[in-house]
Length: 300
Image (cartoon, rainbow, N blue to C red; front, side, top):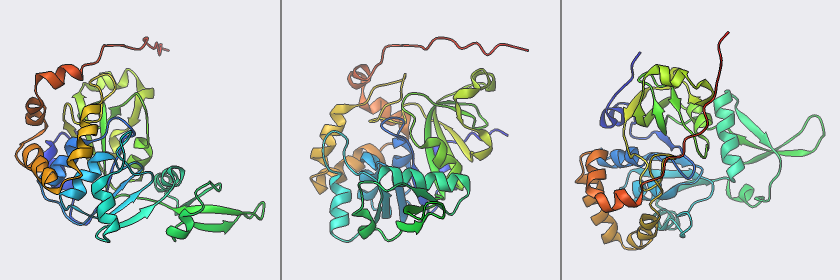
């Protein structure tokens, strides 16, 4: 059945105060529009899980929406620290769990497979065992050696941004593929935001690109430019200037408040946000088309 909703409707219906939320996407396809809508709706007491929190969680934490973060590497990619999240952690106002990248993805794999935990080989991140009691060692019944285990992660709601989806929730994404598939299958509810809503025939024409199937999706939202300042492969580039600018903004609480007031609370939706960015930034983020070679699936 069609699952098309506006983003504001989807967030209101499927993101509840106190939820564990996972905003997916590695480097690109980060669902900033959904993060802004969560802030706009003043959701509270969220546990924010993400392999690389990125600016989206700095902003959500700044808005007072979170009580805890679960993460592997944390930072403003290529720039420095996530100043706001770090300050809240150091002040003891934000709970936290830290894992290695492999540990975090292993948690999602366990959640997606319906397993209680996932074993993994020991890594160089042995100090994390001291900081995080959920990282345990058990005896391998075959070799007798110790192995590391991490508990399954099953978010209440996962948000995934994709390049295109049909109205039922079958979704294509390409470029750098992160943890989107695993976390979507691990979650109780899945909200898709998409650059394009296409006919089901487009999705069926390339079935191997369908990483997210309709049967696990709760809502589909047509939200062009939803990833800015991140990027969507084939649609617009990463806004590196904004990542640099956020480092300056996030150092000043008044500047953070002014940013949220101007770019989140005073903006109705992503369309208005994109228009507000203006033609100069639109032009700077344009990408040159580079389609892949066609794939012939044939007929029998």
